[in-house]
Image (cartoon, rainbow, N blue to C red; front, side, top):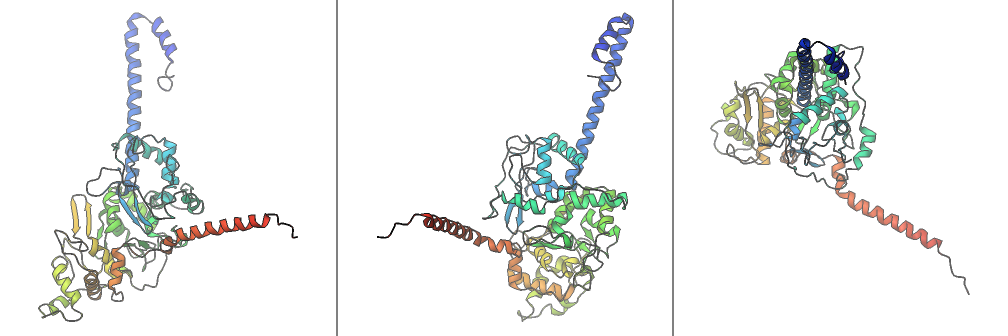
Length: 487
Protein backbone atom coordinates (compact mmCIF):
# COMPACT_ATOMS: atom_id res chain seq x y z
CA UNK A 1 0.00 0.00 0.00
CA UNK A 2 1.47 3.43 -0.87
CA UNK A 3 2.53 5.57 2.04
CA UNK A 4 1.03 8.60 0.37
CA UNK A 5 0.12 9.58 -3.19
CA UNK A 6 3.22 9.26 -5.35
CA UNK A 7 5.39 7.74 -2.60
CA UNK A 8 7.45 4.57 -3.15
CA UNK A 9 6.06 1.20 -2.11
CA UNK A 10 7.46 -0.58 1.01
CA UNK A 11 9.53 -2.96 -1.20
CA UNK A 12 10.97 -0.06 -3.17
CA UNK A 13 11.79 1.68 0.10
CA UNK A 14 13.63 -1.42 1.40
CA UNK A 15 15.59 -1.58 -1.84
CA UNK A 16 16.59 2.05 -1.54
CA UNK A 17 17.49 1.58 2.10
CA UNK A 18 19.68 -1.46 1.25
CA UNK A 19 21.58 0.09 -1.64
CA UNK A 20 22.00 3.66 -0.51
CA UNK A 21 25.18 4.73 1.28
CA UNK A 22 25.22 4.14 5.03
CA UNK A 23 25.57 7.87 5.63
CA UNK A 24 22.30 8.59 3.78
CA UNK A 25 20.20 5.90 5.41
CA UNK A 26 19.34 7.91 8.53
CA UNK A 27 18.21 10.85 6.44
CA UNK A 28 16.07 8.63 4.24
CA UNK A 29 14.38 7.01 7.22
CA UNK A 30 13.78 10.44 8.77
CA UNK A 31 12.25 11.79 5.54
CA UNK A 32 9.91 8.84 5.18
CA UNK A 33 8.92 9.19 8.81
CA UNK A 34 7.97 12.78 8.18
CA UNK A 35 5.86 11.70 5.20
CA UNK A 36 4.04 9.06 7.24
CA UNK A 37 3.48 11.50 10.11
CA UNK A 38 2.17 14.17 7.75
CA UNK A 39 -0.24 11.67 6.22
CA UNK A 40 -1.55 10.76 9.68
CA UNK A 41 -2.01 14.42 10.62
CA UNK A 42 -3.90 15.10 7.39
CA UNK A 43 -6.17 12.11 8.07
CA UNK A 44 -6.85 13.35 11.61
CA UNK A 45 -7.60 16.84 10.35
CA UNK A 46 -9.97 15.48 7.70
CA UNK A 47 -11.78 13.36 10.29
CA UNK A 48 -12.04 16.29 12.70
CA UNK A 49 -13.46 18.44 9.90
CA UNK A 50 -16.02 15.74 9.06
CA UNK A 51 -17.10 15.45 12.69
CA UNK A 52 -17.41 19.24 13.04
CA UNK A 53 -19.57 19.28 9.92
CA UNK A 54 -21.72 16.52 11.38
CA UNK A 55 -22.13 18.47 14.62
CA UNK A 56 -23.42 21.46 12.66
CA UNK A 57 -25.80 19.26 10.66
CA UNK A 58 -27.18 17.73 13.87
CA UNK A 59 -27.75 21.26 15.15
CA UNK A 60 -29.47 22.35 11.93
CA UNK A 61 -31.67 19.26 12.14
CA UNK A 62 -32.55 20.08 15.77
CA UNK A 63 -31.82 16.50 16.83
CA UNK A 64 -31.16 17.42 20.47
CA UNK A 65 -34.57 19.06 20.99
CA UNK A 66 -36.52 15.84 20.50
CA UNK A 67 -33.94 13.25 21.57
CA UNK A 68 -33.05 14.79 24.94
CA UNK A 69 -35.44 14.42 27.86
CA UNK A 70 -36.37 17.65 29.66
CA UNK A 71 -35.08 18.58 33.12
CA UNK A 72 -31.54 17.31 32.86
CA UNK A 73 -31.82 14.43 30.44
CA UNK A 74 -28.63 13.07 28.90
CA UNK A 75 -27.97 14.52 25.42
CA UNK A 76 -29.48 12.37 22.67
CA UNK A 77 -30.47 9.59 25.12
CA UNK A 78 -34.16 9.93 24.23
CA UNK A 79 -37.20 10.06 26.46
CA UNK A 80 -38.68 13.34 25.23
CA UNK A 81 -42.45 12.98 24.94
CA UNK A 82 -43.72 14.32 21.63
CA UNK A 83 -47.44 14.98 22.09
CA UNK A 84 -49.23 14.04 18.87
CA UNK A 85 -52.96 13.85 18.12
CA UNK A 86 -52.61 10.06 18.08
CA UNK A 87 -50.86 9.84 21.46
CA UNK A 88 -47.51 10.63 23.05
CA UNK A 89 -44.50 9.38 21.10
CA UNK A 90 -41.30 9.03 23.13
CA UNK A 91 -38.02 9.66 21.34
CA UNK A 92 -35.40 6.93 21.18
CA UNK A 93 -31.81 6.77 22.37
CA UNK A 94 -29.56 7.84 19.48
CA UNK A 95 -26.28 7.85 21.35
CA UNK A 96 -23.63 5.35 20.14
CA UNK A 97 -24.51 2.91 22.92
CA UNK A 98 -24.27 -0.63 21.53
CA UNK A 99 -26.91 -1.93 23.94
CA UNK A 100 -29.49 0.84 24.00
CA UNK A 101 -28.65 3.22 21.17
CA UNK A 102 -27.32 3.15 17.62
CA UNK A 103 -23.76 2.05 18.35
CA UNK A 104 -23.99 -1.04 16.15
CA UNK A 105 -25.57 0.76 13.19
CA UNK A 106 -23.63 0.80 9.96
CA UNK A 107 -23.60 4.04 7.99
CA UNK A 108 -26.12 2.54 5.56
CA UNK A 109 -28.44 1.49 8.41
CA UNK A 110 -28.10 4.93 9.98
CA UNK A 111 -28.97 6.58 6.66
CA UNK A 112 -32.03 4.35 6.27
CA UNK A 113 -33.31 5.30 9.72
CA UNK A 114 -32.75 9.03 9.15
CA UNK A 115 -34.14 9.23 5.61
CA UNK A 116 -36.64 6.36 5.44
CA UNK A 117 -37.80 5.96 9.03
CA UNK A 118 -36.75 2.32 9.36
CA UNK A 119 -34.58 1.15 12.28
CA UNK A 120 -31.80 -1.44 12.06
CA UNK A 121 -34.15 -4.25 13.11
CA UNK A 122 -36.73 -3.27 10.49
CA UNK A 123 -39.03 -1.47 12.94
CA UNK A 124 -40.79 1.50 11.38
CA UNK A 125 -40.49 4.89 13.04
CA UNK A 126 -43.43 7.24 13.36
CA UNK A 127 -43.18 10.45 11.30
CA UNK A 128 -43.00 12.48 14.52
CA UNK A 129 -39.35 11.91 13.63
CA UNK A 130 -39.33 14.08 10.49
CA UNK A 131 -37.67 11.58 8.17
CA UNK A 132 -40.01 12.76 5.41
CA UNK A 133 -37.98 16.00 5.45
CA UNK A 134 -34.61 14.43 6.23
CA UNK A 135 -35.06 12.29 3.11
CA UNK A 136 -33.73 15.27 1.16
CA UNK A 137 -30.39 15.21 3.03
CA UNK A 138 -27.34 14.61 0.86
CA UNK A 139 -25.10 11.55 1.16
CA UNK A 140 -22.18 13.76 2.21
CA UNK A 141 -24.18 15.29 5.06
CA UNK A 142 -25.40 11.88 6.21
CA UNK A 143 -21.80 10.67 6.26
CA UNK A 144 -20.77 13.64 8.40
CA UNK A 145 -23.76 13.20 10.70
CA UNK A 146 -22.89 9.54 11.21
CA UNK A 147 -19.26 10.42 11.99
CA UNK A 148 -20.40 12.95 14.60
CA UNK A 149 -22.77 10.60 16.41
CA UNK A 150 -20.33 7.69 16.41
CA UNK A 151 -17.23 9.69 17.34
CA UNK A 152 -18.26 12.59 19.55
CA UNK A 153 -21.61 11.85 21.19
CA UNK A 154 -21.26 10.15 24.59
CA UNK A 155 -22.88 6.70 24.69
CA UNK A 156 -25.66 6.37 27.29
CA UNK A 157 -26.76 2.86 28.25
CA UNK A 158 -30.36 3.62 29.19
CA UNK A 159 -33.63 2.79 27.49
CA UNK A 160 -36.22 5.58 27.36
CA UNK A 161 -39.91 5.06 27.95
CA UNK A 162 -41.56 2.97 25.28
CA UNK A 163 -44.13 4.50 22.95
CA UNK A 164 -47.53 2.86 23.37
CA UNK A 165 -50.12 4.29 21.01
CA UNK A 166 -53.69 2.98 20.95
CA UNK A 167 -54.81 0.47 18.33
CA UNK A 168 -54.56 0.67 15.34
CA UNK A 169 -51.69 3.20 15.52
CA UNK A 170 -49.73 0.71 17.65
CA UNK A 171 -49.20 -1.41 14.52
CA UNK A 172 -45.92 0.06 13.32
CA UNK A 173 -45.90 -2.13 10.22
CA UNK A 174 -48.75 0.00 8.89
CA UNK A 175 -46.18 2.77 8.39
CA UNK A 176 -44.82 0.79 5.43
CA UNK A 177 -48.08 1.48 3.59
CA UNK A 178 -48.11 5.10 4.80
CA UNK A 179 -44.56 5.57 3.47
CA UNK A 180 -45.59 4.08 0.14
CA UNK A 181 -48.10 6.87 -0.32
CA UNK A 182 -46.51 9.81 1.47
CA UNK A 183 -42.72 9.42 1.64
CA UNK A 184 -40.86 11.15 -1.18
CA UNK A 185 -37.35 9.72 -0.94
CA UNK A 186 -35.93 12.02 -3.64
CA UNK A 187 -32.78 13.82 -2.52
CA UNK A 188 -32.74 17.59 -2.79
CA UNK A 189 -32.01 18.77 -6.31
CA UNK A 190 -30.82 22.36 -6.79
CA UNK A 191 -32.87 24.59 -9.05
CA UNK A 192 -30.50 25.87 -11.75
CA UNK A 193 -32.72 28.91 -12.31
CA UNK A 194 -32.25 30.07 -8.70
CA UNK A 195 -29.27 31.55 -6.88
CA UNK A 196 -26.86 29.53 -4.78
CA UNK A 197 -28.22 31.30 -1.70
CA UNK A 198 -31.81 30.37 -2.56
CA UNK A 199 -30.84 26.73 -3.12
CA UNK A 200 -29.01 26.61 0.21
CA UNK A 201 -32.09 28.03 1.94
CA UNK A 202 -34.36 25.54 0.20
CA UNK A 203 -32.09 22.65 1.18
CA UNK A 204 -32.16 23.70 4.82
CA UNK A 205 -35.83 24.69 5.07
CA UNK A 206 -37.20 21.70 3.18
CA UNK A 207 -34.75 19.21 4.65
CA UNK A 208 -32.69 19.54 7.82
CA UNK A 209 -34.70 22.37 9.44
CA UNK A 210 -37.94 20.50 8.48
CA UNK A 211 -40.04 23.68 8.51
CA UNK A 212 -42.94 22.00 6.72
CA UNK A 213 -43.22 19.30 9.40
CA UNK A 214 -44.73 21.89 11.75
CA UNK A 215 -45.99 24.66 9.48
CA UNK A 216 -47.94 22.58 6.93
CA UNK A 217 -51.48 21.34 7.66
CA UNK A 218 -52.13 17.59 7.67
CA UNK A 219 -54.59 15.53 5.68
CA UNK A 220 -56.93 12.80 6.92
CA UNK A 221 -54.06 10.31 7.29
CA UNK A 222 -51.80 12.85 9.04
CA UNK A 223 -49.54 13.42 6.03
CA UNK A 224 -48.60 16.94 4.97
CA UNK A 225 -51.04 18.64 2.58
CA UNK A 226 -48.57 19.53 -0.15
CA UNK A 227 -50.98 21.93 -1.86
CA UNK A 228 -50.98 24.07 1.29
CA UNK A 229 -47.28 23.93 2.11
CA UNK A 230 -46.17 26.17 5.00
CA UNK A 231 -49.65 27.70 5.36
CA UNK A 232 -49.93 26.83 9.06
CA UNK A 233 -51.55 24.13 11.12
CA UNK A 234 -52.25 22.86 14.65
CA UNK A 235 -49.35 21.41 16.58
CA UNK A 236 -50.88 19.85 19.65
CA UNK A 237 -51.77 22.67 22.02
CA UNK A 238 -49.89 25.16 19.84
CA UNK A 239 -50.48 26.50 16.35
CA UNK A 240 -47.65 26.79 13.81
CA UNK A 241 -48.56 29.90 11.79
CA UNK A 242 -48.56 30.55 8.07
CA UNK A 243 -44.98 31.27 6.94
CA UNK A 244 -45.62 31.58 3.22
CA UNK A 245 -44.82 34.85 1.46
CA UNK A 246 -48.39 36.16 1.72
CA UNK A 247 -48.13 39.73 3.10
CA UNK A 248 -51.21 39.43 5.33
CA UNK A 249 -51.61 35.78 6.27
CA UNK A 250 -47.92 34.89 6.13
CA UNK A 251 -44.54 36.56 6.59
CA UNK A 252 -44.55 38.70 3.46
CA UNK A 253 -44.71 41.83 5.61
CA UNK A 254 -41.55 40.90 7.53
CA UNK A 255 -38.21 42.24 6.37
CA UNK A 256 -35.31 39.85 5.84
CA UNK A 257 -33.55 41.44 8.81
CA UNK A 258 -36.56 40.81 11.05
CA UNK A 259 -36.82 37.17 10.01
CA UNK A 260 -33.11 36.58 10.64
CA UNK A 261 -33.42 38.29 14.04
CA UNK A 262 -36.44 36.16 14.94
CA UNK A 263 -34.65 32.92 14.09
CA UNK A 264 -31.54 34.10 15.93
CA UNK A 265 -33.22 35.40 19.11
CA UNK A 266 -36.86 34.33 19.11
CA UNK A 267 -37.95 37.94 19.52
CA UNK A 268 -38.79 40.86 17.24
CA UNK A 269 -40.39 43.88 18.90
CA UNK A 270 -43.70 44.76 17.36
CA UNK A 271 -43.95 41.37 15.67
CA UNK A 272 -43.57 38.14 17.63
CA UNK A 273 -41.94 36.10 20.37
CA UNK A 274 -41.09 32.41 20.08
CA UNK A 275 -42.78 30.07 22.54
CA UNK A 276 -43.50 26.36 22.70
CA UNK A 277 -41.92 24.26 19.93
CA UNK A 278 -40.60 27.34 18.13
CA UNK A 279 -38.76 28.44 21.27
CA UNK A 280 -37.14 25.00 21.37
CA UNK A 281 -36.11 25.34 17.72
CA UNK A 282 -34.54 28.74 18.38
CA UNK A 283 -32.77 27.59 21.54
CA UNK A 284 -31.43 24.27 20.26
CA UNK A 285 -30.96 24.92 16.57
CA UNK A 286 -31.57 28.21 14.81
CA UNK A 287 -29.52 30.53 17.03
CA UNK A 288 -26.46 28.37 16.36
CA UNK A 289 -26.64 28.53 12.55
CA UNK A 290 -24.40 30.87 10.61
CA UNK A 291 -25.66 34.23 9.43
CA UNK A 292 -25.30 33.03 5.85
CA UNK A 293 -27.57 30.05 6.49
CA UNK A 294 -30.21 32.10 8.30
CA UNK A 295 -30.21 34.60 5.44
CA UNK A 296 -30.51 31.75 2.94
CA UNK A 297 -33.55 30.34 4.78
CA UNK A 298 -35.08 33.82 4.81
CA UNK A 299 -34.54 34.28 1.07
CA UNK A 300 -36.19 30.93 0.38
CA UNK A 301 -39.17 31.40 2.71
CA UNK A 302 -39.93 34.86 1.33
CA UNK A 303 -40.00 33.35 -2.17
CA UNK A 304 -42.53 30.62 -1.40
CA UNK A 305 -45.95 30.46 -3.01
CA UNK A 306 -48.28 32.75 -1.00
CA UNK A 307 -51.25 31.07 0.66
CA UNK A 308 -53.88 33.56 1.77
CA UNK A 309 -56.65 33.14 4.33
CA UNK A 310 -59.66 35.33 5.05
CA UNK A 311 -57.57 37.64 7.25
CA UNK A 312 -57.42 41.30 6.28
CA UNK A 313 -54.84 42.39 8.87
CA UNK A 314 -51.49 40.77 9.63
CA UNK A 315 -51.32 38.96 12.95
CA UNK A 316 -48.92 41.54 14.31
CA UNK A 317 -51.09 44.45 13.14
CA UNK A 318 -53.69 44.38 15.91
CA UNK A 319 -54.06 46.39 19.08
CA UNK A 320 -52.89 49.49 20.88
CA UNK A 321 -52.30 50.60 24.48
CA UNK A 322 -55.39 50.46 26.69
CA UNK A 323 -56.32 52.40 29.82
CA UNK A 324 -59.04 49.91 30.83
CA UNK A 325 -56.99 48.66 33.78
CA UNK A 326 -56.86 52.20 35.23
CA UNK A 327 -60.58 52.70 34.68
CA UNK A 328 -61.62 49.40 36.26
CA UNK A 329 -59.14 49.37 39.12
CA UNK A 330 -60.71 49.54 42.59
CA UNK A 331 -64.22 48.63 41.52
CA UNK A 332 -65.97 46.72 44.31
CA UNK A 333 -67.12 43.15 43.89
CA UNK A 334 -66.85 40.95 40.82
CA UNK A 335 -69.35 42.48 38.44
CA UNK A 336 -70.31 40.72 35.21
CA UNK A 337 -67.66 41.14 32.56
CA UNK A 338 -64.92 42.03 35.05
CA UNK A 339 -63.56 38.51 35.60
CA UNK A 340 -60.88 38.83 32.92
CA UNK A 341 -59.79 42.24 34.19
CA UNK A 342 -59.26 40.92 37.72
CA UNK A 343 -57.09 38.04 36.50
CA UNK A 344 -55.14 40.41 34.25
CA UNK A 345 -54.65 42.95 37.01
CA UNK A 346 -53.50 40.33 39.49
CA UNK A 347 -51.39 38.06 37.26
CA UNK A 348 -50.36 39.90 34.07
CA UNK A 349 -50.14 43.66 34.54
CA UNK A 350 -47.04 43.65 36.73
CA UNK A 351 -44.91 42.26 33.88
CA UNK A 352 -46.72 43.34 30.71
CA UNK A 353 -47.68 46.73 32.25
CA UNK A 354 -51.19 47.96 32.94
CA UNK A 355 -51.55 49.41 29.43
CA UNK A 356 -50.11 46.30 27.78
CA UNK A 357 -47.02 47.97 26.35
CA UNK A 358 -44.50 45.68 28.05
CA UNK A 359 -40.95 46.71 28.86
CA UNK A 360 -37.35 45.69 28.21
CA UNK A 361 -37.96 42.22 29.65
CA UNK A 362 -41.57 41.41 28.77
CA UNK A 363 -43.19 41.85 25.35
CA UNK A 364 -46.01 44.16 24.41
CA UNK A 365 -49.45 42.56 24.25
CA UNK A 366 -50.38 44.57 21.18
CA UNK A 367 -48.63 44.28 17.81
CA UNK A 368 -48.05 40.70 18.90
CA UNK A 369 -48.77 37.65 16.74
CA UNK A 370 -50.02 35.67 19.75
CA UNK A 371 -52.82 38.17 20.47
CA UNK A 372 -53.55 39.09 16.86
CA UNK A 373 -53.80 35.62 15.35
CA UNK A 374 -57.17 34.26 14.20
CA UNK A 375 -56.34 31.14 16.25
CA UNK A 376 -56.11 31.73 20.02
CA UNK A 377 -54.10 28.55 20.66
CA UNK A 378 -50.70 30.21 21.16
CA UNK A 379 -52.04 32.86 23.52
CA UNK A 380 -53.82 30.25 25.64
CA UNK A 381 -50.89 27.80 25.54
CA UNK A 382 -48.47 30.50 26.67
CA UNK A 383 -50.74 31.26 29.63
CA UNK A 384 -51.19 27.58 30.46
CA UNK A 385 -47.67 26.26 29.89
CA UNK A 386 -45.51 29.36 30.19
CA UNK A 387 -42.45 30.20 28.16
CA UNK A 388 -38.77 29.43 28.50
CA UNK A 389 -36.12 30.31 25.94
CA UNK A 390 -32.37 30.68 26.34
CA UNK A 391 -30.46 32.57 23.67
CA UNK A 392 -26.78 33.08 24.38
CA UNK A 393 -26.60 34.22 28.00
CA UNK A 394 -30.15 35.60 28.03
CA UNK A 395 -32.91 33.51 29.57
CA UNK A 396 -36.49 34.54 28.78
CA UNK A 397 -39.09 33.15 31.13
CA UNK A 398 -42.82 33.36 31.81
CA UNK A 399 -44.34 31.12 34.49
CA UNK A 400 -47.02 28.60 33.58
CA UNK A 401 -50.45 29.44 34.97
CA UNK A 402 -51.97 26.09 34.00
CA UNK A 403 -50.56 23.96 36.82
CA UNK A 404 -50.04 25.28 40.34
CA UNK A 405 -46.36 25.97 41.01
CA UNK A 406 -44.04 27.84 43.31
CA UNK A 407 -44.48 30.86 41.02
CA UNK A 408 -48.21 30.88 40.36
CA UNK A 409 -51.60 29.63 41.41
CA UNK A 410 -53.37 27.40 38.93
CA UNK A 411 -55.91 29.22 36.80
CA UNK A 412 -59.10 27.36 35.93
CA UNK A 413 -60.27 26.93 32.36
CA UNK A 414 -62.83 29.68 32.95
CA UNK A 415 -60.23 32.08 34.36
CA UNK A 416 -57.90 31.45 31.41
CA UNK A 417 -60.79 32.06 29.01
CA UNK A 418 -61.74 35.25 30.85
CA UNK A 419 -58.24 36.75 30.88
CA UNK A 420 -57.64 35.71 27.27
CA UNK A 421 -60.83 37.45 26.18
CA UNK A 422 -59.84 40.56 28.12
CA UNK A 423 -56.40 40.61 26.45
CA UNK A 424 -57.90 39.98 23.00
CA UNK A 425 -60.49 42.73 23.43
CA UNK A 426 -58.10 45.31 24.84
CA UNK A 427 -54.88 44.56 22.96
CA UNK A 428 -55.40 42.00 20.20
CA UNK A 429 -57.89 40.62 17.72
CA UNK A 430 -61.34 41.44 19.15
CA UNK A 431 -63.07 39.08 16.72
CA UNK A 432 -61.63 36.06 18.54
CA UNK A 433 -63.49 34.96 21.64
CA UNK A 434 -62.85 31.91 23.81
CA UNK A 435 -65.05 29.67 25.90
CA UNK A 436 -64.15 27.47 28.85
CA UNK A 437 -64.45 24.46 26.52
CA UNK A 438 -61.89 26.00 24.13
CA UNK A 439 -59.35 26.29 26.94
CA UNK A 440 -60.04 22.70 28.05
CA UNK A 441 -59.43 21.51 24.49
CA UNK A 442 -56.10 23.34 24.27
CA UNK A 443 -55.05 22.23 27.76
CA UNK A 444 -55.66 18.59 26.75
CA UNK A 445 -53.53 18.79 23.61
CA UNK A 446 -55.68 20.51 21.02
CA UNK A 447 -58.40 19.40 18.65
CA UNK A 448 -58.13 15.73 17.76
CA UNK A 449 -58.19 14.94 14.03
CA UNK A 450 -60.85 12.64 12.60
CA UNK A 451 -58.36 9.76 12.44
CA UNK A 452 -57.84 9.94 16.21
CA UNK A 453 -61.56 10.27 16.87
CA UNK A 454 -62.23 7.09 14.89
CA UNK A 455 -59.50 5.11 16.69
CA UNK A 456 -61.73 3.80 19.54
CA UNK A 457 -63.95 2.15 16.94
CA UNK A 458 -61.08 0.46 15.12
CA UNK A 459 -60.85 -2.61 17.36
CA UNK A 460 -64.62 -3.37 17.31
CA UNK A 461 -64.65 -2.78 13.56
CA UNK A 462 -61.71 -5.15 13.08
CA UNK A 463 -63.39 -7.79 15.27
CA UNK A 464 -66.63 -7.45 13.32
CA UNK A 465 -64.73 -7.78 10.05
CA UNK A 466 -63.08 -11.00 11.27
CA UNK A 467 -66.47 -12.41 12.34
CA UNK A 468 -67.97 -11.55 8.97
CA UNK A 469 -65.08 -13.25 7.16
CA UNK A 470 -65.39 -16.36 9.33
CA UNK A 471 -69.14 -16.40 8.76
CA UNK A 472 -68.58 -16.14 5.01
CA UNK A 473 -66.12 -19.07 5.07
CA UNK A 474 -68.56 -21.12 7.16
CA UNK A 475 -71.42 -20.39 4.79
CA UNK A 476 -69.28 -21.33 1.79
CA UNK A 477 -68.21 -24.59 3.45
CA UNK A 478 -71.81 -25.44 4.28
CA UNK A 479 -72.89 -24.91 0.67
CA UNK A 480 -70.14 -27.25 -0.56
CA UNK A 481 -71.30 -30.17 1.66
CA UNK A 482 -73.06 -32.96 -0.33
CA UNK A 483 -76.77 -33.19 0.38
CA UNK A 484 -78.37 -36.55 1.31
CA UNK A 485 -80.70 -38.05 -1.27
CA UNK A 486 -84.35 -37.83 -0.28
CA UNK A 487 -86.30 -41.11 0.26
